[in-house]
Structure formats: structure tokens, C-alpha cells
Length: 484
Image (cartoon, rainbow, N blue to C red; front, side, top):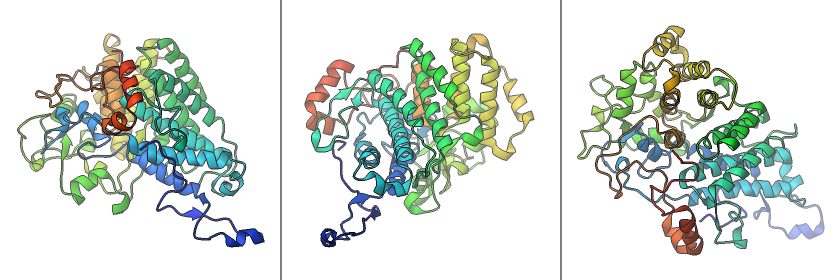
């Protein structure tokens, strides 16, 4: 449950304080006093960034939105693409990475402990990274569920039943958190245990500003005035500036921290998910040079997508294109945020009149950055020139938002939540719902329902209050910014 705040976490290496006087001689050296914040950072990044951007399997974190936007289709158990799972749990994020990050902030703030934990990076730097990561995870949660516990969460025994904050209020505070945290870096010792950006303060500042910019664009329908102000402020503070700035979570050639697609395809020999026919057919239609870097060929050497939400199953996995081997290798990294996504956001902002600049030029730069990202050394300017000249790809002012959103959909392959965010807000690309949904609805889901087994039972008063405020706890109650 998200309401508990453990003092130490099992399996973590813990620091001890040396005995300097007689009174300390009775302290058990095997009962450490303070968590090792470096290990808390590592654990929080692994579960709060790595897992949220990669998990596959029935009910998996990332694969469900990727199924909703039809980047993937399931192959054997045709259920997730038909929206069978309604309630999803965020409890592990509260009781895991979020509580760890709050512990880091507390240890680096408390006068009694801050000197001891400074060995893992300056106090300000640790607090700054922890605040940015907390804000990132909370953004991920609220974009999926809408109103969620925020101001009263992570209080431990002080509050086992936190109220739900409105998403608008959460967004307002997250803008502040990202900005203040970025300003908190002090030039002191780099944070240890940072397996995402290696303690690089400059890169953390870019990451924070980029999150603010992407959040701001989500306000384009619900509060464009604030969206424009936040977008321009974030852009001025410095966002990702090239593919060299792309943020990726790296897995290892080790069963204890391997890429979940590898685990599904190879270790578990399940092959539950293949690239959908909707996605592959569109890439074929526009002769997209990214196709071989996104999808593998089937047993016949062809790029064939798995029929989306087809029941009964259309055939065994070997008939369809799984994700490309470069995405499904044991140590294959996953994208967290990329330069291409930043450029697509700027192109849309220019089209909306939020920023000065040429929407067409920004769109074309975004497409080029995405091709370079996916194709790597195989990229050529000739391939880009041929691709961008096609009728369905070449920028047209009258269809700008649709084209930007469609190309973003391609660029964000296997970044399900971000792709779902874009689709919910813009309506593009135009997608048909599953033919026979299993959730009692007829449309593509707009949100995830709460973990009712815990919220509805252990936090029932606040659960009932959020339903009365936000709307029914279904997949079709739109969250605050979803005003398509």
C-alpha cells in the first residue's frame, strides 16, 4: 500500500555510524541507523523509471497503453487489446520508488542525518534529483488515473487514508516541483546510485525542463493560456537539444535486470505480444525506413503485423512480426524521453501560436531526429529526403496537428503512456476500437480505473469522494486535460 513509509528497505546495503563515545558502544553494528541513499536512488530508478517504461505481460504497466494505441497486439490471449483489465494498481509505485525518494529527501533535509548521507552526493543535489524523479513518477500516475493521492500521500502512520487531489492541482504543483528542483543543484558532489543520468546535474535540468514542456502541451485543450506560459518558460530553461541528450533506461545482460521483452520472448518463451497490423500496415503504406528497426520479420521473412484484437487468435507468434531484436535484446535500453518528442512538441506549439518558429521546419526536424534515433548508423539524408517528400508525410498546414500526432505515434513506439497521452489529447491517428471489447464498452479506454481492492476497501471514504468529483471509476471517465 502507498500509505506506509518504511525506515529501511530489505535487500539494500545500509550505512552505519562509527562509535565515538562510550554510550554508542551498546549500538548493534548489525542494526544500521540510516539507509544508503545511493541504493535508494538505484532502486527508485529501476522500479519508477525502468519498469514504468518497459513492463510487459498481462496487465503490464507499459504494454496496455501501447495496446490501446495499437502499436502492439496480443497474440495468444486476446484480452488486453480488448480492454479486459479495467482496474490497475499503482500501489507498488507509492510503496516502492515514491517512498524511497521521500526517504532520500527526508534524510538530506533532517539536520540530524544530512551530514551522514552527504557521502552519497551533496544534500542539495540529492534532494534535487529525488524531487525530479518524484515529480516524473507522479506525472506518469496522474496521466493514467487522473485524480490521485498526492499532498496527503507518503505520510506513513500520520495518514493511512490519503485524500485524492485533483489532477489540475497536481499538475500545478508538478510544474513548481520540476522548476524548483532544477534550481536546487549546487555544484557539489554528484549523486551516487543514479543509474539514469549518472549524477549529471546539467542533464537532470534538461530532463526537468523537458517534462515541464511536455506537461504544458497536455493543457492545449483544457487551459491553453497556462499551457503556453509553462511551455515557453520550460523551453527557455533548456530542454533536450539533440539525440545525444536522449534519456534511456539501460537494462543488463543479467537475469536480475533484463529487458522485459527479452524475458517474454526468450527467457519465458511466451511471445505474448507482436507489433500490430495497424502499426505495421501504416509504416508500409508510407515506406517508413524505421520499420526494420521497430519490427522483426516473421518466419517467412516478411513484415506482418498481428491482427489487432482479433478473436479467435489469428495464428501462432511465428506468423507475425515481434518487436525488433534490437528492442528485445537482454540488455536493450528503453526510451524515457527523446529529442524527437521534444521537436514534435515544439512543432505543435508553433502551429498553436504558442512559440515563434516555423511549424513545418520543426516538424521536419522532428521526423529527421526520429529517423536518426531509430536507424542509427544506417541513417542517410537520402532516406530522409525520400520519406519526407511522400504525400502522407510532407507537411501540410491544414493537416498539421494530425501529421505531427501521427508521426509522434510512430516515434513513440513502445512508449505507450506518452503515445496514449498524445492520442487522447489530439485524436490522432484515427484508430478503430477493438471489435468485441471485454469491458462492457465500445470505445478505446480514456483512463485506467483505480485499484478498487485497496482504494475501495481500505480508503473507501476518499474513494467515494473522488468518484463523486471526477466521475465514475471506469475506463471512459476522461481525466482533467482530456478535452478532445
